[in-house]
Structure formats: C-alpha cells, structure tokens
Length: 148
Image (tube, rainbow, N blue to C red; front, side, top):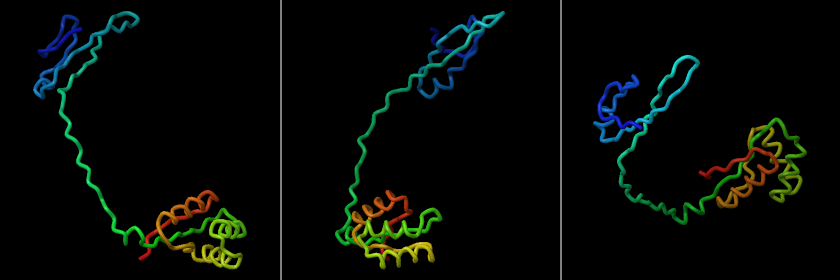
C-alpha cells in the first residue's frame, strides 16, 4: 500500500493527485493492485478516502398539535368511476361496506357512473380511512377529502 502525499508518478508509472483532497482536510490512501492482461501488466489504483469525523447535533423535534376541531372536522369518502367493475358489483359493494339498502346503493352507483364520482359518507377521518381501505379491498377507486 502506498500513501500519497505528493502529486506525481510512482515507480510503476501510476499518477495521482491528492493535493485537492488534502486541501479539504482529508487523508488520501491508495491501494495498488496489478491487473494482468495477455501481454502486459497494468496497474490500477483504488483511492481510499478517510473523512474527518463530524460531530452530529441532536435533531430538534417539533410537535404539531391539532386542535380538537381539526381532528373532528368531517371528511368525505368519495368513490370514482372506473370502466372495469360492473354496476351490479359496485351496488353490492356499497351495500356490504356501508350497509346501505339496495335503492340507496343503486343511487350512488348511478351517480358514480353518470358524474364520475359520488360522496358516499362524511365523518371523522379515521373512520373515513377505514371505509376507503375496505373499498380498495373490493378493487374500487376511493379517496378521502376534507369537507369544505
């Protein structure tokens, strides 16, 4: 192993320039290894750079506290139209997930079909996320958004 302190060429004809890294306060070490070709021997250098140890500061943690009004703010569960699922299947999913009677489930299904989306439920965010997850389980495209 050869430690490079000066720029130049070593006895094997390998050139290196450590002064650039030395100016930045880093130690440069070169590892020499031979690569044998068919007719000639070549030399390659792999620079190993040791960086100075930096001291890490403890991260500052800022707590964001939501007010009770923000937490209880109503969220909408929205189902979007997709060209894959049958109307009867979407109606059945609305009945199973939300417990809607057939007429109400068909009303929402037709709203999704004609308008591209329908607001199925409004309430607290945690429950809305649960409904969206259940609708995704039935392969329907559903999202939540804040009520304005």
